[in-house]
Length: 118
Length: 110
Figure 1 (cartoon, each protein chain N blue to C red):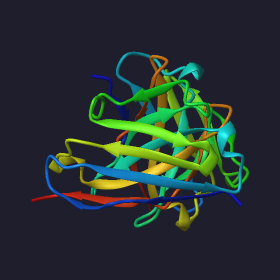
Figure 2: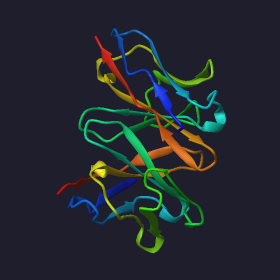
Figure 3: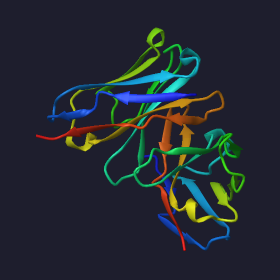
């Protein structure tokens, strides 16, 4: 069974940093591209970042480019999102999602809440 | 700024049919945008329904179908059930390097 579980969320002050993790199981992690997305309270979904299985290709949304860094450790079946210079508007539930071989986003984790507040 | 637009809200009667659309600010949506559709119920994680325009996941009910319609991506729900009441999001790939979600459509079954 495919499972994705995010962790690392919490309360952080504006300007601070946080590193999110996504633990994957039930599939050959290294073969799949992965994405991060988020959802602010009461708002819609926002795509953030993409990474291929080999980490050879990485994309970012303009809203987080230069502040967030996506990475992965295939040996540990883990995906990461390093978030720096956090802003109040980064407050959201952050999701990791698997991307299949046909541009499909299929499995999502339950999400982890990040709150940026003083 | 690239914008993906969906109907903010739609209402359908049980047993009816409804089509949700997804438009792209820069022009027509094509198969090259690999449209994905998701369903999200309150307090739940988004659930994938459709990928690459019209392909269903193994768990997607048969009453859900995807297509391209008049330059937009479309999600059609047939024989709508009360449990289909939810928020629906489309997702488009563009510029070879970005994904963009639509603003979502709140579907009410009444």
